[in-house]
Length: 473
Ligand code: BES
Ligand code: MN
Ligand code: ZN
Image (cartoon, rainbow, N blue to C red; front, side):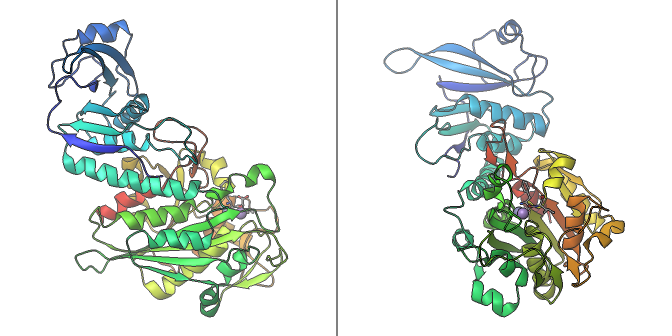
C-alpha cells in the first residue's frame, strides 16, 4: 500500500495544536518562532538529552480551546549536527513516535527539509495484508517549510513505497504478467513482449529462465519522454525475477524464502519511470524489466544447457540459480542494439556474494565509466542510498570461459571466486562497450529490521539514488 501519511505545509504553527514537534540542537537550545511557555533547556537537561538526531523528549502541556481543557504534547526533537543524514534520522524518529495519531505539526528544522520530510514519510511505510498493526500518522504538517521541497519529498517517498510494495507482494500474486500490468499503471507508455514475441525476437535468456514456470516470462519496456526535447537518452535495466527458487539448481528453504524480492531491481525501474514526470526530469529514459519466474519442473532448463541470447551470443548454463545475469544479458544486449543509449544503468539483486562483501547498508556499483561512477556515488551520498564502487577485475574474465559456448554463466571451478565481480563481468559482455553501471543490490534490497526509514522486507533501495541522478542530468 502507498504511504498513507500526507505531508502538508502550513504557514504558521496554529494555536494550541495537540501534537507539536520542535527542534533543538546539541546546545539544547530551540531556535523556533513559537513561544512554548516551557523551560526548554531545563527540561532537556532534566531528561539528560544530548541533542542527538533521533532523540525525542515528550512534554505534556495544557491546551486551551474547545469546551474543556485538553492535554497536548510537545515533542522536542534533536537534530544533531543538522546534516541531511541527521535530519533523516530525526524525521524518521518523529514519524515513528506519532504512529496512530491524527496530526503532527512540525516546526521545520534548518537545513535539508526534503531529506527530513522524505525520511518522516518513509518511516510511515508499512506493508500489511489484512488490517493488523498500528496505522501511521495521518498528517504531517510542516510549518514554514518550502512547499516545493515537501512536494518533492512526497513524490520520492511514494516512489520508494511503490517499489517496496511490488517487491513485498507475495509471489502467489505477482508473476511476470502481473508485473507488466503494474508497469502499465505507471503513467508512461509501456510495451510488453509476451512469450511468443520474446521467441520471435530471440530473447533466449529470458525464455530459458522462464521455461520452468507455469507463469510465462515477459520483457517490459517503459518510456519516459521529457516535455522539452533532448538528445540525451538513458536506459535503466531491472532484474525482474518474481520468484527465484534456483530452478533445478534448487535453493535450500532458508535461502529461498527471501526470494520473492528478487524483482526488486525491476520494481525500482518501474517506480523511477513513474516518478520522472512529476520531478521534471529533462532526460529521455527507457526502462527495461526482464521478468521471469525461476522454477524447477519438467520443462525447466537444465544445468549444462546452452542458450542463445538476444543478438546471438551463446551461454552454457552451468547453474540455473545464476539466472539473473541470463535475463539481464538479453535486456542489456537489446538496449545496446536497438535503443542507442548514452548510458545504461542496471539494477539487480544479483549475488549473495555482495552482501558478504558490503553487508546490508551499502550497495555495490560497478562501472565501465569513471564519470558515471562518480555521479552515481555522489547521488548515493546525497540520497542515503549509499553505494561503494567495486572493481571490474579483468584478470577474472577467464572464470566465464566455456569449452562449448561463448561464455558460461558461472565459474566451473573455484580458481577465481569473487562471485559478485564475475557476475558483473558477465553482464559487461552484453553492454557493447557503452558507458554502463551495474548496481548489485542483493545485500540492500531487503531489510531485517523495522527501524529508521526502513521497514522489514523490501527497501526500495535504488529509487532515491536513480531519481536524484536522473533529475540532475
Ligand atoms: N537472487 C539470487 C541472489 C540473492 C541472494 C539475492 C540472496 C538476495 C539474497 C541470485 O539469483 C542467485 O541465486 N545468485 C547465486 C549465484 C551463484 C549460483 C553463482 C548466489 O548468489 O548464490
Ligand atoms: Mn538465483
Ligand atoms: Zn535471483
